[in-house]
Image (tube, rainbow, N blue to C red):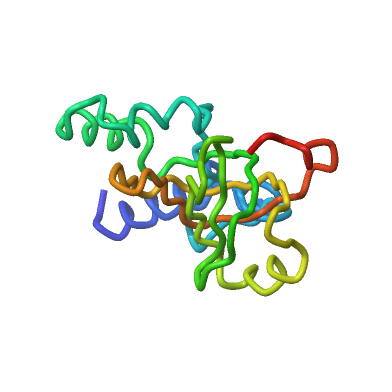
Length: 163
């Protein structure tokens, strides 16, 4: 078979089937299922803040094994949690997850396009459900940092939550 024939055969094979041209609307982690940039669907981990807190934010595990566990199971994966807004920052919000915390446990970086609406809709003290991508942890300040965040709603039945 000639070189041109092989190229035509490859082009024909690539142009038939195997491609899903359907839009990604409704499959992302953002508000109304929005995705971020050219990324695929988010990979959520079913883990609570209360589970991660003693592992990453307390000095119970050596730094090497802790970093390896973070990289293998949690880094850049998505979580959906409910917490209380403690403050608004330049990049998003801080949230309290634990009743005993006097400041905040999570720093959520909110997407630029959603920051103004978030500030207008919510106030300090609101209990909210949010999503974000686990980015890093700080076991000195005992804070988890999440990026690509979105506040989904304020569950009315949880405004009296202990956190």
